[in-house]
Structure formats: C-alpha cells, structure tokens
Length: 466
Ligand code: AMP
Image (cartoon, rainbow, N blue to C red; front, side):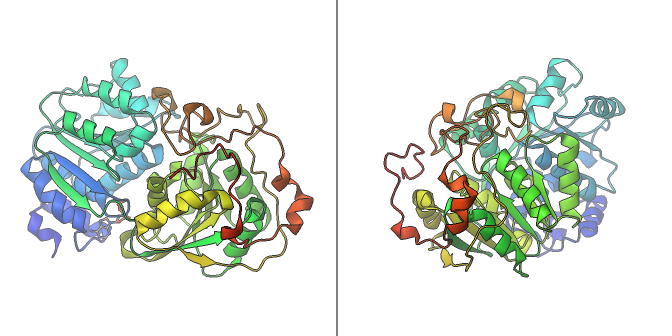
C-alpha cells in the first residue's frame, strides 16, 4: 500500500518522498481519504502514529487549490514544541507547494509573527494564548479559515485551555472543516467534539495502549536512591538516547546539572527556561549534542526525536494518560524502545493502573547499587529560592500560561495542591526530609522490595486512590 492511492498533487508527493515516507501509517490510511472528502474527523490516536502527516497532507492538498496569501487553515496545539514540530512537518511535506506556515506562540517577540502575517501565510500553527492575543488586537484575520485542527485536545483541556478554545471559535467562520485529535477521550473532549464536529468520521488507532513496541520495566527504589539508580542506568551502554521525566521543574533542572557534572551529555527542558533556551535544548537533543534530556511533562507531547532508546520515568507520571504520552516518545515510527519507571512504595496505585492499560505486568528490574551518587533535592524550591514561589512554579509548559487557570483534576487532588500549569506540587513545603539527607542516603538501599513498603499512613497525595 502506498501514498499513490490518495492521488496527491505531484508537489505534495515530492514532499512525501523527501521525508522518506513510503507507506501510510494506519491513521493516515484511515484519516486522509475522509479529510480529502471534506468530512470532520474525530481522531483518537496516541503519539508516534504519524498523526501529524494524517492531517497535514490533506490540508496541503486542499490548499494547493484556491487563494494564496491569506490564512486558510489553523492548527492549534498545546505546547510550543508541538507547534514548532507541526510547523516543521508542514515545511518539509509542503516544501514544493509554495504554501507557507508560521508557528505562533508566547514567550517570544510578536514581531516575527506579525511580519509573517503581513507577508501572507496560508497556515497558522498556534498555541491558544498568543493566538488569542493576536486576534484580540486585530493583528490577524481568521475569517477566511476553511480548516481547523485541534491537536492533542485532551492535553489542552488538562492545561486549562478550553475557555481559550471556545473563545477562538468566535473568530472563525461558521462554515469550516474541523479535525479534532486526542489521545484519550474524557467527557470534556466528548463534549467539545459534540459542540464543534458535524457528522465526524471516527478514526480510532489503539488509543489507550502505549505503543506495543516498547518494553515496560520498573525499578523499585527509595526516593533517595533515584539519582544513583539513574546514573547507573545511563552508564549502561544500551542507553543511547534517553528522555528522563521528572515531576517538577526544580528536579529536572538539578538532575540535568548533576548528570552533566557526572560527565553525561545532559540537558534540561522545563517551563522555567526562556524560549531560546528551550529551543537550544531541543535542537541540541535532536542533533545529538545531548543524548539525555531531563524534562517535565511538557516534553511528553511535543518531542519527536527519532531513535530515543529509553524513556525513564524518574518520577511516576500523575496519570495513566501521562504515562502513555511519555512512553510515546520512544518506540516511534516502528522502532523499538524501553520504558523504565522508578517506583517507590507510594506509587503502587498508579502502577496498577498502568499495568491494566498496557495489559501486562511491568517487568521488575534490579540494580546492584550500594550508595548514592550526586544528590538531588527532591523537594520543591522554597519560596523564592529559584525565582519561583513554591506552589506556583509548576510548569504551564511554557505553552501559554496566561490563558487558563483551571487546574486539571489529577490523583494528587485539589487545585491548591498543584501549580498553575499542571505539574502537581508537593504539599509538604520546602523543608528537607529524611530522604534528602545525604548521610542517610548513602546507606539507603536500592531495589527495595516494593511489596514490603508500608503504605504511608494517612498519605494525602491520593495517588493510590484507584
Ligand atoms: P507523529 O505521530 O505525527 O508525531 O509522527 C511520528 C513520526 O513518524 C515522525 O517522525 C514522522 O515523521 C514519522 N512518520 C509519519 N508518517 C510516516 C510514514 N508514513 N512513514 C514513516 N514515518 C512516518
């Protein structure tokens, strides 16, 4: 089966060839004909399935006909990295079409974006906040939009973007084609779909199971043993490129610094970094200058770096969905990958849920490590310690922090317990605990028997609530 069956314009076929795609992925086979027919789409697909090209190719096909130099398609994505990536995909696949796109997001000057609007672009790929900024100040006219894509809709909901999305609709013409993509289908996304899609074709690619090409392993470890365990794993020669996920920005930053000090080519990606630094980190990771990226969940959706051999959950994700997204960073486009999850006694509930979702028990790994290497303070920063107030430093993913304050409901509990952007904050303040005492850490065993860990009495995190 090849792309020829879609009868794409020759210029688009040239772009497909330039990208090296020979066979459509299942989501492309299902979605492209429906989009070309003009139908609305509800696409349920996990990351790494070729979802971007599934909407970019038919958009390019449609836009090769008709007027130029006015905005005819808008793609909305939750994070800057994802917006950049979609924009790059459009530039590659559409390299011969003469169609132009621009990525629009906050954290950078508006100047370049305004210049592109003036020069005439046909496709806008945007994060909701900055897009609304431009619309509110009448810098941008979307009255000629024929196609709207909402990508990673469930993440947009999690990040509190729904009010912004609803407001955006008012700037768009009533008559348009809508493509909605989401990795999961919570009720809120169902409602969104009901309100904007007309007679949609349902495209459903195994959305709830993390890619089958990934092997899922867990390490039972005490919190204090995590740095040494990570160091040990990374020294393993099979780890060529690793994406390490932490729960907080603070730990991501510290861990990257410590890994670098230990001689690894590591870089952080977290929402406290300026957009330039984020871009430099992403580019460096893509080009192989860094082979380890320590990231908060902002990276879970946006990153498409080929050949990530390992995803390491230094901290377990808050939800099964977040696990799916993190793991989707490896095993992409038919490559195999490994997912390691560091699990403490507190994490049993979420691990059980993950195992239900992947349909198997995670393989328990052991590591023979007797002492801890570079210590990492697992506590959030004390108020003002790194320019943030504890409890407010959560990562709005640098996506567009301004547009939403609705905090997602996570197993961690209430809005108060979280930061503004979806990275949950601990409730126990910034003080040192036993685990962060290096002297204690040195004697802390790794590979602790998970099953023998008592459940924390009266633990308030609620993470084992399932
Ligand atoms: P996505 O799910 O859109 O992020 O795509 C995941 C990866 O698969 C990206 O690196 C794409 O360039 C790649 N990809 C998309 N479609 C195809 C295809 N038909 N053949 C090979 N690779 C593809």
